[in-house]
Length: 294
Ligand SMILES: [Zn+2]
Image (tube, rainbow, N blue to C red; front, side, top):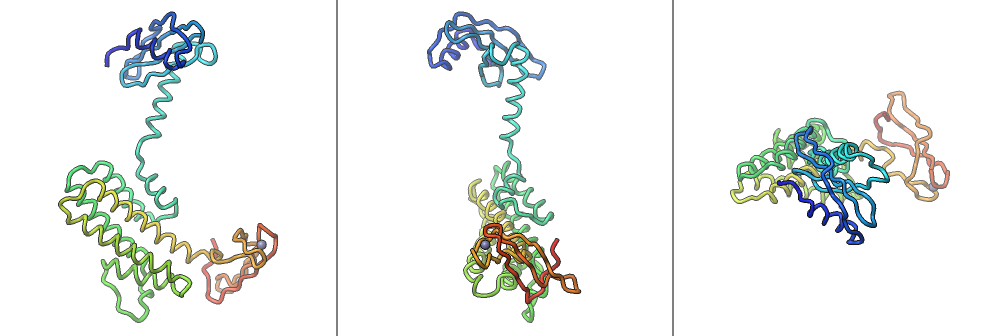
């Protein structure tokens, strides 16, 4: 980009003042190139709006700063402007882990799953060719198989046949039946089962599709990431003994454990919860054993 002219800089300042002032003089005060880009700081004086520094240059957005109030020298305003641009660039940079944390609401994810999710979240950012999208489908499927292996334990099948090692749908189904049993969980269980099957089917479709675009592949990554978040939520729900509890008086869920009664085996038998809303205590006795609290 060529240097800005005196006329361009003047127009910019007048436009920024909503044409309330006229530029009476403007000259480049300093040129800098110590950061690898040519940047000029102009000293601009107006008739009614005081004096301004205007910073502009190659691939640097133009901006103006008042001279009297805060910025006393061209050098100072240059440092400030370049620091600001650097920070703006850094904050708009795509970070795969932030994408995962946003979709899963920052829930704890098993490290081997998080690592694989980070890889697909990075791949989608640079995917262009149909082969890139197919590869994303393959990786999504591998993540789901890993998810199945991570949540499933042999006891979940009880007397049924053990699923094959890579049978994600079956492992997920047994996990859901085991962790979300009972009619209270009926709707939750059924909707998650549908999302699970749809996500697996979609990943398989992307793997073989010869006309997917960025948008379908991106949907696949989003579905897969959110499904991992859903299963981690279920795992946490199961190991959270007070998630179901309410205050016996005011029904608030703002409860704090004030006493726990451990059996000889170290497992929780009884909890006393204090309601932060009304101050009443609620006692919870566990018929089934709950693992020791951390
Ligand atoms: Zn209460």
